[in-house]
Amino acid sequence: MTKTRIFQFVVVCIFAVVVLKFVINDPEEETKAADASPINVESNETSSDEVEDVVADSTEESEAETPKSTLEGRPGELEDKINDIISSFDGVSVKEVEINDNIGTKKSDDYITLLRLSYDAPNEAETSKKLINLYNNEIGADLANEGDISKLVIFWEVPYLQEDKNSAKAILVLKGKQMIFDTDWYDPSVY
Image (cartoon, helix red, strand yellow):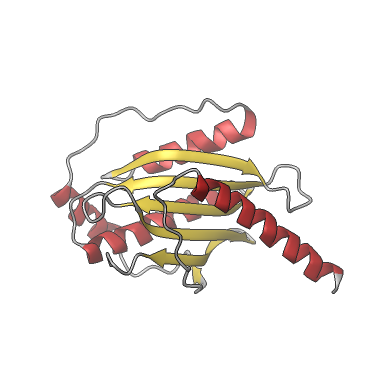
């Protein structure tokens, strides 16, 4: 094997351990195979105006304060940035933010971020899927500007459609100055 192949294998193994650690902490989590289809974050068929109309019809405005990070240093700044981004979405709440060092790269300030979000608006499955995809795009685009998050994993719960289970997952990776979809998965029993 070449050094590049060995390095790629090590990176994949480390990422798998991080994801498994996150999944194992939730005993009700069912793991599903992800549908690998790279999609550019910039390409999106749902406009922000359509999202605002749907969300405005289906949710009440949240007056809750944006939670502040208990982490120190750059991870704390990133968590605050993530909470600010999510607070701008109607009907979305943050269940957990986990920011880990990416030990699979040579960069010292390189992070893998795991987000557990909940889409709480009472919408139909297809509408929820479109909005989750749009939110994934917006989160990825905003965090790509930070430059030090190399991988972003977003787990979604949609309690209106399925209680206490993840019904969607997206993995985005930083390529150049953009976050692109590495994989995304939507529970076929829901969507």
